[in-house]
Length: 537
Image (tube, rainbow, N blue to C red):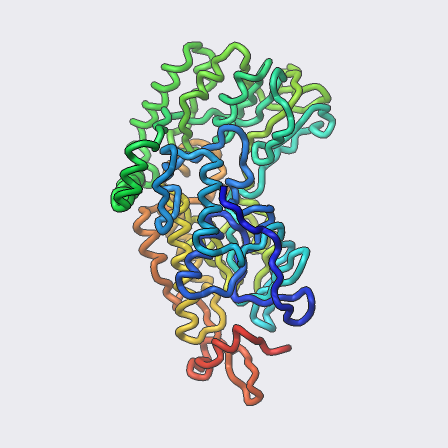
């Protein structure tokens, strides 16, 4: 395992012992944060810090350590194009291997000195007078020209508010907070939820449990898992002929791209995959009553489908009971369902996913008028290209609303960090101090995305999913081809933004002028100086 110094680094104090200055603050050290940092470095922007609340980098792959945790995207695609790994051991990598890959990226690209672990951001507010971001952690306050939110959609576990849960006398934990110290052997175990993490953990629990009770609200589509070892000749080929891995990556990307018409424009094209899912269920589950419980009643693709060759056999085992009645309460010794039955258990494991649209960081990042992202959105997450939000100057987010393309999220991340880099570089070239995406531009993007997604399987497939916010708006997907999103983010068009230049006064200090002043020449020298000092208000 790669050893990384994750202790908090000390920077030179600016105004007092708790205030430090940098050009860019990046929140989060998962794929998004690391990808942003690497691209900034490649662009010659090395004055930045990465703030990570955990004690190690890795994001969701540092946190989700439950047995069987595995990516459902091929490893060749679920990695950075600029950091190919020829030594993946499986086509679909397990958590430890992805975690080590990200740590290796930190080392390979020399990010250790800019990485501050154990630093949870408690507040990040735009200072309109000083035209900068003030980012608070327990240890210090960072002042920065730019803020990048890379906390990701899987950073806040969703735990259902079950009546009486506090009265349960056994162990309760979420798959994202796995209790490795607790021995589950021989226990009566309850798993609440049947999403991706539950599909992966249930086959690991079934052989060791005395009894396993699975509480299912909605079944999910399961496809045969195409996973296979990558050791041997594939690894040797990729190591000796790097172009072969690039070709394999491009081929997989095109294969994913070919799925877009079915998911976005004509869900009827997905009937073949639905038939494959039904055949997989029939082949692995002989009991017709259990099979009926496990067959989804919505169109394939409406919820994220999952791969597994072990999930159905585990559910069909004699020590497993699949319960479809809703949970009404939790008692000291078990779970009560709507039919009045008490299911006695020793441990409750929540496989209930994450707060996709209710990330805690949305409540602490505050823009120009002092409103948080959550307040600005007011239940309807909206951004331009999933990256910038009106009213939040010089703020960029990774995997924001309507940014996900139907392939690896790393593809989206690389497109977004390219866009962020383009914004910053053009601002430097033009002497621009701040940018804030225009409200009309953002709304136009939201409207066009909504029109594309209106016919998508996610909107019309007859399910309730985390892709949709209350009211039914799809805030997750871009709703188009991957190449379209990459083309739109390759180079930023700053006319989409309200721009402000620093204006040199007779005193030599700076003030901010709107684009309407047209005072670009006066600002040319100021850009470099602004990085070092801001006028005291």
